[in-house]
Image 1: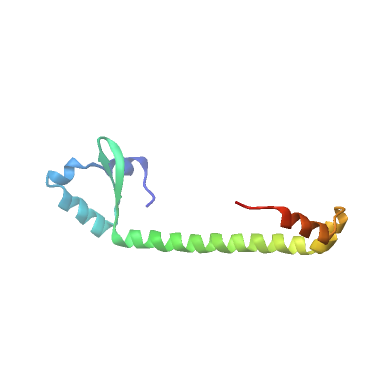
Image 2 (image 1 turned 90 degrees about the vertical axis):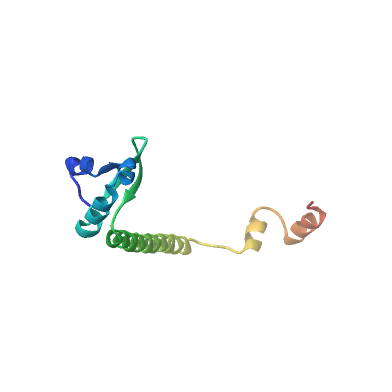
Length: 116
């Protein structure tokens, strides 16, 4: 999949080439040599043609990368949880008291609130 600029320009194929009898040659090159082609429609890159083997390798690498990223995120979250566990924590009741309220006052307030 490492291609030089010259290789890349040789792999640009207008979609019209497929209707002009060149499809067989292109497909053989993909299957036999593992070459890739960029299909142009109205001179704009539209699709990539690659071998099934190359596609499967890309899919496997993508799955491995997703798994690795998930593990990294899990480690990040674990470290965050561990750092927070070291902090002094208190109960909700203590928090309410520190804010100058009582649990009874909160219950009275919550009973007076209506949700629509």
